[in-house]
Figure 1: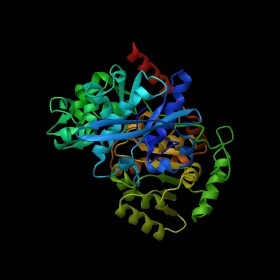
Figure 2 (figure 1 turned 180 degrees about the vertical axis):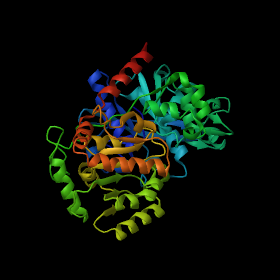
Figure 3 (figure 1 turned 90 degrees about the vertical axis):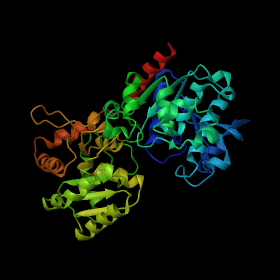
Figure 4 (figure 1 turned 30 degrees about the vertical axis):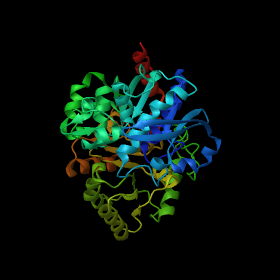
Length: 470
């Protein structure tokens, strides 16, 4: 597993959760899955690195640069991780956002291939994640200046979010990648050189993080300019739904919750709600509590929430928001909380313990995303019995299903079009559902019973890996 982040070593977003959980889940299928990551300064300064063992120092050429790295090995629980150290590229504040990110992750990708002969096991498959490791697949395919042991490896590339592609001008080809324009042809796209496009073209198999997203990215709206490439490679693209680590996200053992609960003991959820209301200064009320844990950016559907939330408050609801993002969204919700004391609580920061209490204490969880490759928040909300209200897109469509009062099946509320009218109808329907004595306990139970573990996805990856070996 080649990636730019993975728990428990380093995390900036959902990619790290996926890598940490999937690598463990694969072990149940007798697949030895090991991680290889950059050695960021944050990892070096963490207690985990105290257990790391130095393996080897390696030099190689990245175009005209004579580059060096040290390879470390560390075991954390059942997970073995190799770390590529180069202080110039990775001992910086944060993980991404630097002017030379293209060079940093081209170095990392080539270093991964150089490191393989020195590992204490021989992989059959290199599974690369997102654009930061895309050049691993490209370099292996081009077969230039790479060790013999890497030449016959199968490559899988997973698109976690097609919005971030690693797109650069032609200057990067010879100056950074050390390739001729003929060798770099798989990366060329519309006059630029695109790391993700190169990996899609050169990998043996491409996966996405949900079946619906695998279909969506072949459309212009979702493909972010790469939709023709997706359609041309449709035969090797498979959507595998992500899961969540159910041991990590468990309302029966979560130390952040004041009261524990589960599907078998659901009454504790009401006490978590009461404690959350007290913690955030909300009125002690049996009104429905709508929670949201999100980055405040447009594609998360924040405009839909902003245009409907006051109407929902007047209908008799409470609202709690945890998240940061674009300044104008933060300001709007802070002012909303000032205008509706006792009904609205807004925390423009991020706290995992508070996020757990919002999942555990909310009756409904708002996630009206314009696009969502898979989504982690709605899965956690279901695990904690907060009924999701989502738009039909990506993994939201694959995990949340409309509750039907006649059959008693379904775990949430979905709407199709990203319009205020559609979202408002979904919100009004949620109010009716909440006050239905027959339906409300059923939909909460259905949410708590939803199995979104990594067992199923790991089994699918097991089949895909073995098909590549054949």
